[in-house]
Amino acid sequence: MVTTLNRKVVSKGELIELVNQWKRQHETIAFTNGVFDLELHPGHIYSLERAAELADRLIVGVNSDASARQLGKGPGRPRLPERTRAANIAALDMVDAVVIFGESTPRELLAELRPDFLVKGDEYRPEEVAGREYAGELVLIPRLEGFSTTNLDEERRADCGS
Image (cartoon, rainbow, N blue to C red):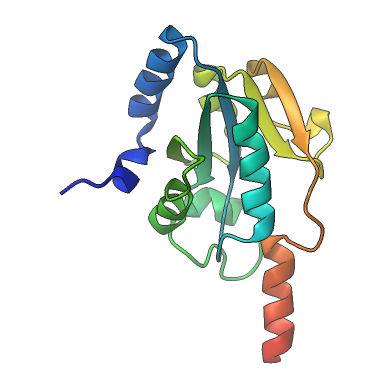
């Protein structure tokens, strides 16, 4: 049995078909991406809610395990496998589609999707955002202070004495 959750996690080819369908229906599309490791925390939810408010449809790109390791997030990261991380994001009502991408940035994916909005956290400067040239508009969302997976992971390790 296929669940709604599983149908939201799509391949790149399926996503391109969905995006073409949405564009034919004149729906606007926002795209954001990240590793989304360990757990979904309030910072993730806040950012995804702001991204969803910008458009009719929200696509979330999730770094593959290999690309997450390339980003140097820390020892043993990602802790959760890519399919689990993608399923966690897909479980959110505000998300319309999730795609796992294997490159360190979603630049190639954005070149094909050409979303109306590319959404990232304001810890980035506009010139640092890969693929911004393929989106109608780059939107930088303010971070919710005190919530980042890296910081939460460091706090946990300190609490455990490791």
